[in-house]
Image 1 (cartoon, rainbow, N blue to C red):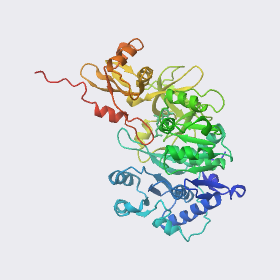
Image 2: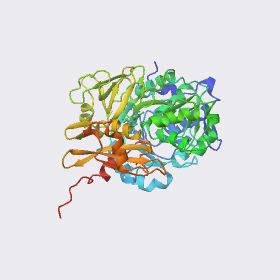
Image 3: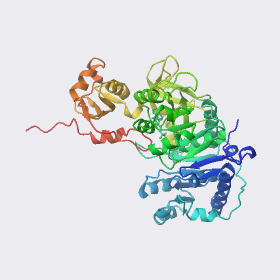
Image 4: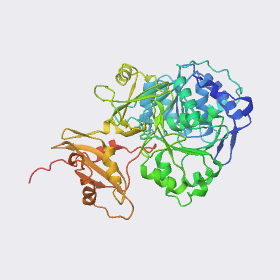
Length: 508
Ligand code: AMP
């Protein structure tokens, strides 16, 4: 089995002239050209003083060159460290201070500011623009088109990805060659990717989904991709007839369903739609199959573990579940406190072990140790269960668990009951401080447009379905839920916003 990424990052003679990537404006790059660019960039990195093991932090807009930079870093033995393009300079300052990269690659407009940040840790800044411009590109211009790769081993770091950090400080997840390569090969087989595939790529490339799942799978399968700089429903619908597969976050699919041109005919030739990074509502899954005849394949993963589970390629893709553990991945449900393994359909902590699981958090040995069990299982922080058929269900993040009057309430159960009420588009259930119960179960509901749902309708509908302690104390209506760029509902934002909802008002 291939245990480093390097075999994926080499032009094989039989595919050298095949198109690897095509941009929305019709520009193409063959495999040969793409790897030539990565070689030139790898030389440029050496020229900037980057040695094996050095971190290279990158905050640039999505472009073919930006993708080539990822491959170039790995070929040079450096540790690729992508940063969300939305991070502010002061956030970048934290990541750079923590990771101490030799080089920070930023947008041309940010060079002065980022240069000063890089200098504080003895690093330097170079730029990469969206039009194939920037100082790093200039340094790469006259370099050779071949490069002798650093002979990395399976356990060497290929990347550090900072977690989204919805609680506490963002942590750098250290990912090895083996973590990434083994997962890519598993996914190619599981999802039946071949050289005939054309993947529609509209995800950001600073996150595990668009960077590793999408790109490494395409490279490992010798497939091609339509590479969009961002998700745009019109653009996706225009290009779909040329694709065979698409990977997206749930919001991509809800936005496509809102579009009148997203039809059965447009998608008839597609082989596969994959969703992940956030829960896909069962209603979206159902609406999608009604509209297109395709059952979206939902999978579950995280920055620290790559992909853990997937609904089957053949066989039932069950809405509201994330399918089975992938080959080579062990997954169990355990009591969050004691670590005792739980039985079928019992709800507990999802724990995983396998070649996909990261090496630990960068410079946080204690944090790393506390998130692994003594037998090597990683405690994901996700709460879930395994049903009688072996499908894994995610009930929520551990930190989203609500404890009210001493009882545990899993928000997902309440959300499913509320979502079933006529006129509800979606809901988020959170716990906020309550003077009597510790936390009060609180539902934030997005109604379908032009319906006049009331708090009382929702309360009445769930009264027979949920035990008293699980019923929301309040139901509040909003036009939309706060989401991050990967489509995750930001419950921490909601908890903050409604933190004083149950505060007792002073008498008089
Ligand atoms: P990230 O590290 O940003 O990829 O976030 C990982 C987290 O996203 C997981 O720990 C889950 O809480 C959530 N997640 C990913 N995929 C799914 C899914 N298919 N259903 C529900 N939650 C998911």
